[in-house]
Length: 356
Image 1 (tube, helix red, strand yellow):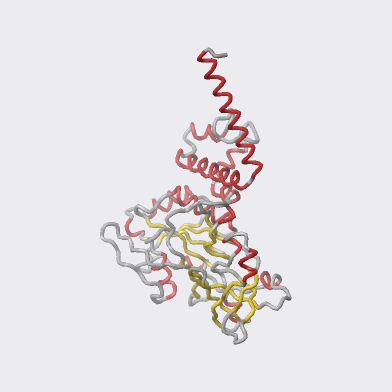
Image 2: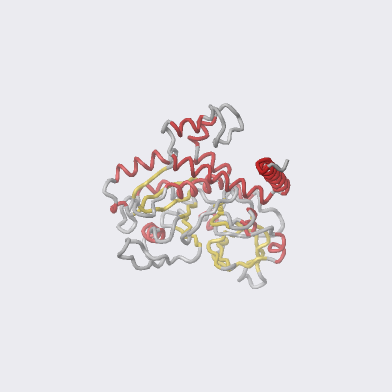
């Protein structure tokens, strides 16, 4: 079991293995439904059992990179048949255009999620808030990495600005291409601990991996002269064992980040608004037009950034929309509410025309 311990096997997962004859493996790569995993004796390809596919309510219940599986070996011992996904300690999942149950799992059983951005045009505080909400909701620890820091004339000022924008989140400046600023990352990349890199295409995630592992495992595209960004080449999620024993999952760039059920993450990402809301006159204040709203007062007094507040309201509306689509009762109530509103509007229009 020594190899499994290297890949993070511990008592938490062991208690869920059960006595059904399955042996534990961890998924280290997945591409178009093809899996590779690590067992106690080494790597092996893994296929999903028919029952596992049939019982899965959606993609969220299928294996992802970082998952621990209970598998049975084929008679020749060369292929594993996955019968169960063991309960996850954490999950990094983004929403899809469909139902929340159709969330796409980006990585599972992650301790630290590195959100990699650059200091040029990719730096977008509103998008970073989405990443933080997703990570906090999934139970992992977010860390923001400001890559290509040499392109910014005021390193200290940018770090101070980011620190104020994202209180409680570790932020590090680095240049992955030249290997500068990487030493602080060792704190998170401990033996048997799992991290994942997240971010847009071309921000340097694969460059960072190559630096940490000491060799070019991930192919890099050419750097565009117009914006000094590398072309995206990573096409699948894959876990790598680093020289110091840490585990790092490299992921393709995300063009769109739609949140799934991220209510817990929103409360942590927007903790400042949560603190202000305790002083609102009404306990169920929605911070939009209610009298005695401490959040709106802070916004009016310039103590709360308009863009920060607008993004908070936008993400809350996205969450409400997702819940309404998933909950038939909420959907019916919303429909009745809007029918009543429209009926009232029609009545007012008739009064104006003198028809009543």
